[in-house]
Image 1 (cartoon, rainbow, N blue to C red):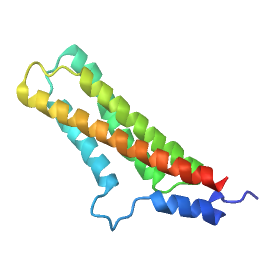
Image 2 (cartoon, helix red, strand yellow):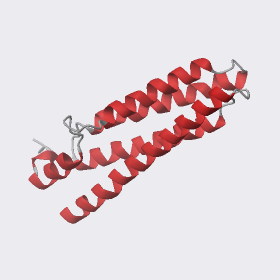
Image 3 (cartoon, rainbow, N blue to C red):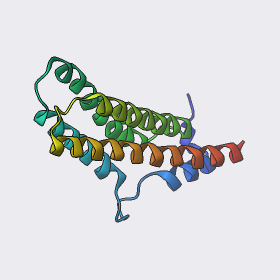
Length: 144
């Protein structure tokens, strides 16, 4: 019979320190969900060019993946699983930023402003997840 990796109290404490707390005024799960919803709304407004149709599919996938992986990280199987999911969140936010940069707004100021805001939000999410990775890597390294 295999032992649950979360049975180690030091690993449980590391995970519980970083798992999102519903009592916080600022909820990262909601923020990632809102990001994915805003990307969907933005893509619907884009000019229907061949490149936008193809390129628009990509940020739809990657922006949704940020939140989906964060939900998985919120209920990890181990500290290693938590780190993997958070790293994927960071990677998907980075990919979202890339595809948002590539999209053509057809010179429409309102769409361009929205594109830049979404790009900035993707960048902020990258920084948040990067910070979580750095902090938890130190905690995990201290366990060993």
